[in-house]
Amino acid sequence: MTNPRLKRYFRWEAVPPDEVCLLSEKERILLRGDGICEVMPLLDGDRSVEQILVELSARVPPARVFSVLDELRREGHLADGPTPAGAEETAFWEFMGVAAQEARLRLGQRTVAVAGQGGIDPGPLVDMLASMGIDAVRGQAGEATPSLQVVVVDDYLRPELAALNRSSLATGCPVLLVKPVGIEPWVGPLFIPDQTGCWACLAHRLRGHRR
Image (cartoon, rainbow, N blue to C red; front, side):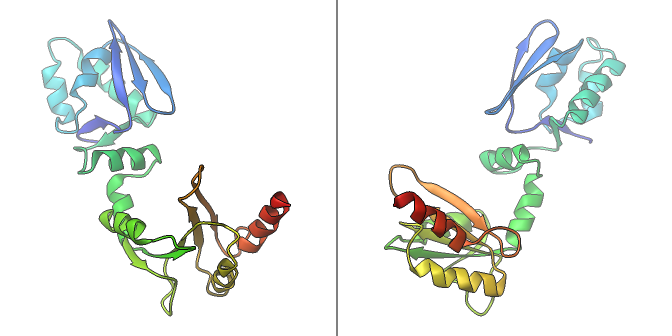
C-alpha cells in the first residue's frame, strides 16, 4: 500500500489526545494510540507513506506512524490510492469488501435482462443499470442467456412468472424479482438454478399466506 486512505464508507472524529472514532452506518470503532490523531487527516489517498512520514517527522516518530498504518491496514480500514469517481458507489463497494475498480470491471462483463410484468415499466431500472456501466437490456432472456434476468413486477404471484421460472430452470439463468409498488417495496429473492429454491417454491408459500 503506497498511498493509504480511509475506506470511503467511514467518517472519523478525533478524540484528543490519542483516540479516533471511526463511524459508518453499521458500526462505531474506537481506535487508541499515540499518533493516531495526527495520522488520520493525512490518509487521503494522494499522499504517499513517505510524504506522511515527512509531514509528521517533527511530531510523530516514524516507527509510530508505521504502527498506526499497520493497525489500520490489518483491521481492513484502508484502501490504496485516491477515491475513484463516484464516491457513493465507491463507499458501497468498499463496505461490501470489494474494490470499486474491480466491481466495475466485473459488472462491465455482465449482461442483465430486465423485464416488466403487471404494467410495471422496466425502463427506469434499465437506465439506472446502464448508468453504472452494466450492459442492461429490456425484455426477457432470448437465445443468448444473460448473466441475470431481473423481473420488475406488481405481484410475485403473477401467473406469467411460471413460464419465466421454467425458462430459468432450463437455461440456468438466475432470476431476481423486484416489486417496486405497494407500501413495502421488495427486492428479491434471487433464484439460482440448482443452488436455491425456485419461484414455484416461493409461490407455494405466498399462496398459503394469502388463504
